[in-house]
Amino acid sequence: MILRRFICYNASSTISSIAPSPKKKPLIFLGSPQASVTVLEALFDASAAPNSSFKVAGIVTQPPSRRDRGRRVLPSPVAQYALDKGLPSDLIFSPEKAGDEAFLSTLRDLQPELCVTAAYGNILPTKFLKIPVHGTVNIHPSLLPLYRGAAPVQRALQDGVTETGVSLAFTVRKLDAGPVIASESIQVDDIIKAPDLLSFLFSEGSKLLIRELPSIFDGSATSKAVPQDDSKATLAPKLAQDEAWLSFDQEAFVLHNKVRAFAGWPGTRAKVVVLDDKSGQENELELKIITTRVCQASENRDGEQDYVNFKKGSLVFPCGGGTALEVLEVQLPGKKAINAAAFWNGLRGQKLKKL
Image (tube, rainbow, N blue to C red):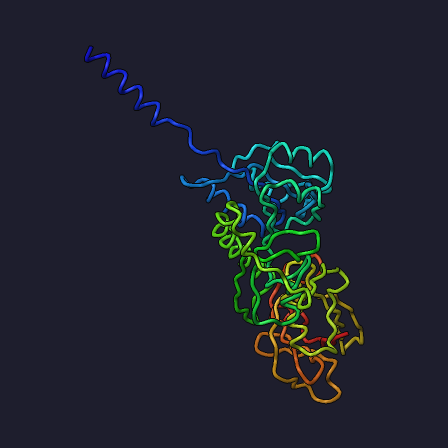
């Protein structure tokens, strides 16, 4: 009799101890470039915590494309990271358009509570936005409503801003115009380049997201989110390849900001002429300008404003308004980047003239 009671007691305790934990809320992440990986990594880490209320139930990203020197067809950086983390390939989606009916049907089957976007690179239609229970939130690397659009970091650096930031906002059909849940501002120095700033802002944005997820899931974020003032909105259109050229008629600080903004892609370029006084030959070169800084004033005398000098490790280009741009690193087509001293030594006494 005592033995029977003992067994019954322990069976009851065991059933209690293995009671199922609350079902985790499915979350879908949308992103594509390397900068987005930071956000996905933060979501994976947070979802693995013992007290996490959500799981990453799927990834949506751009289709594989040709990249690298070999022009191989490769998955997006986000897709590759998800595969490396062990996410099944059938949970990684790369529709040509986010409005494809087959894709939307699959998304509905996953029953997401929330979708999170970070540089996904595709327009989300109304049919998509209606699927997640708690909506879609976007990490946007600017202080909205400033710099709405595809290139907020690049356009901010091109404008020479000293302050920018990152915003977490609900996604609506109008471009980057949804209510802002939270934002974080940072000071910008005059040497940081776009790829580094973009990476930092997405890192800060991932922290905002993880902090705000509880309020998004319980619905309180909807009431506290602040509508944007459209009258203060500025746009950040996608960069174009033909914007890459530098015009030395502009002041040096304008060119320096452009070099920082266009670093990575498409880069900035200038045409120069190499003059050989002995033979009289002229050779036109295209230079990729990689790293620069601003001089206070050009030291070139009248009649020499078209010529490039070399001073203290940099190529000095006379610019508009009596300013000058110091170029510290350059790259010739098909070659590796080199410092200004190496390039100048390669001229072997020939003159360098800007175009």
